[in-house]
Image (cartoon, rainbow, N blue to C red):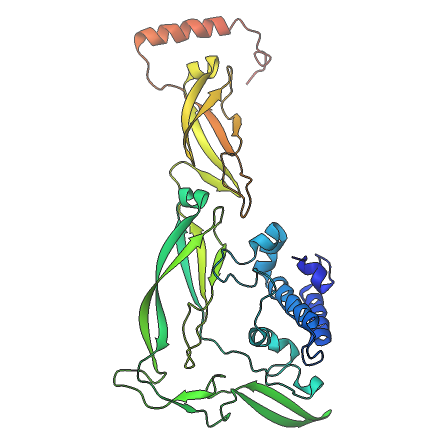
Length: 362
């Protein structure tokens, strides 16, 4: 898959306005009405729309800059626009019609050859999904119960009298530049082209009811708080029965031992003074279970030890981060009389060692 910046012919530090202008130029060049029967032009048109859908969104662009194509839309269940040049033409016009002034964006340029109002969809649903570190480490399949708005059984619809079923209304205004035509979404039907007519008792004026649905999603290993997955067609329906999307935003549950920093994890390990002096092999927790850590002799409190490959997997990659262990040497607060004599003897012995700070007056 080509780099999205290369597709639009812009640099990685281009502004949002520059990206928008570059996309508009390509969309005009490869528009299907201008290139009838040209499959390559249609492919280029979709490719440009896919690139713009990511680079025009700050969050998606940041993920793309960090992870490349792997970070765009999470998972395999209809994830955003990250799965290749497969965008539906109606979705393209619905998503980006505002760039060209709304409505049928190419009507004025190509003589309005095809109606491009776009496939009007219902509202998206956004939920949060909390994950344990162990689930993030391995990836997990989760079942989510979602309350969706769906068209009630027995509802009848009529053609919108305002837009005559077109979903759009056109207004002509006289300006200093002459007569200007502006197309916008029909205010009565919201672009659906239909309004609710007869409806069963107990159904609201919008013809919708709420229903619970259980959806199974596969969460890839390595996600972080703020990452999200788009599950197409599992949002709220509109009167046409077209559903929006379900946006699943991930968040991490606090862990008993670990603190996360990107793909690395940190843990604090308290050891005894004898272990610090002589060294030891200590079994400590990791994301994959317990593992043995070698404590070198003479280690100082605050020293960081690295356990390579014991962190989180990088998203869509076989590489893993590290586990960083901060060693803390414990000082006993109470000692037996015998232990005190041993420590006192040790202090006398250590006092014979030259101390570079011994002559400093405090």
